[in-house]
Amino acid sequence: MAKRKTPQVKTPPGKKRPRKRPPDQGSAVDHSAAGVTPAGGGLGNIRNSIDAVDARIHALLNERARFAQLVGISKSASGKAVDFYRPEREAEVLRLALKRNQGPLRDEEIARLFREIMSACLAQQEPLKVAFLGPEGTFTQAAVHKHFGSSVRALPLPAIDEVFHEVEGGVADFGVVPIENSSEGTVNHTLDMFLTSALKICGEVELRIHHCLMGKMSGADAVKRVCAHPQALAQCRGWLDDQLVDVERVAVSSNAEGARRARDERGTAAIASRAAAEIYGLNLLANEIEDRSDNTTRFLVVGRKLFSASGADRTTLLVSGADTDDAGALFRLLEPLAQHRVNMTRIESRPSHKRKWDYVFFIDIEGHVSDPPVAKALAALEERASLFKVLGSYPQAVL
Image (cartoon, rainbow, N blue to C red; front, side, top):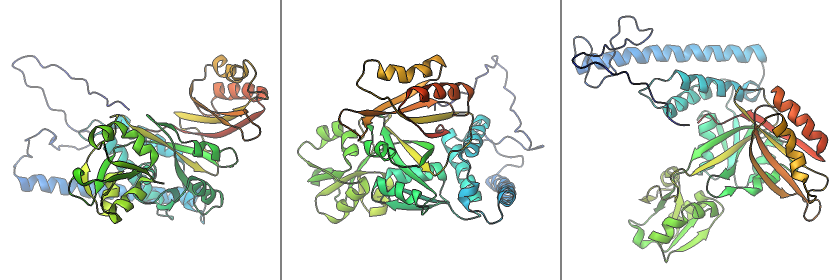
């Protein structure tokens, strides 16, 4: 999301611009400008003001938590956290927080703070159990905390299919898996799981990916091999070609596994996140070595049911025609979307696993299945399709 710019009002020469008083603070003085101190001045006075604000924040947080308890009680006296979790409501809260934000805190910081507040309030019943592609220290774990906050029980699992199975079996409430990278494309294993799984997509997370080179050595000149997930190696290919020309590249199951090997093997370095360097006790040898500055990975949140519309949603479909090798087969499937002015944002084809050269299509469209234009388009599409499945209708990533 592009950072919003605050309109600037020009002040005529020789005149001072009046300072605006913060809303709802009575006679409080605006301390946001650099160097401004409260009346009576001094660092102690500023600290006392901060303490007073902290006390008000604390009281309001507890008040919010009590309202969250009432929401839980009104729905089910003996329910579990998953029964109270509403991704569409959380997306609405985050969008409102960003709309209100006038700084100096950045939108990303505001979103993170409100996410943690919602996470802590929901965990009063019990923490959500969220399975993810592990081990600890992966970017998928970072996506879990970005979407659900820190007050969850995160369950690292070694494979994408195990994440699906734990959620299907009720061991985990939700799962988080990677689906695509902005520079390296789709994670096909995740797509293929939807061919047989009954799980629904409940949300999405977009995470900026910053790769670091790390190891036990003190400098990159001592690196003999680099271990990382194949996606990470591909995302840093240009940097590796330029900086570590003769160093062996070893593909492993996850970046965290590469970090573990870097911890245990002499001469081995890893490409992973800063969090992995802390977890495995490694030195950072180089920062932000990804080839593209906008390198972003999209993750899906999978669960056992669909949720209501949030007002800014995405729907994912799994469709196919009777004969996908016929001329115009794909056009006939997609035509209802154009007729009802429903925007398609992504399409991927995968083998159907039924017979050779037969394909299914994974399609992302804007809107929720309950939106009238989307509902009409999907009804027409379903009539033309031999396979039609709504994989999820969920809030678009807020940031």
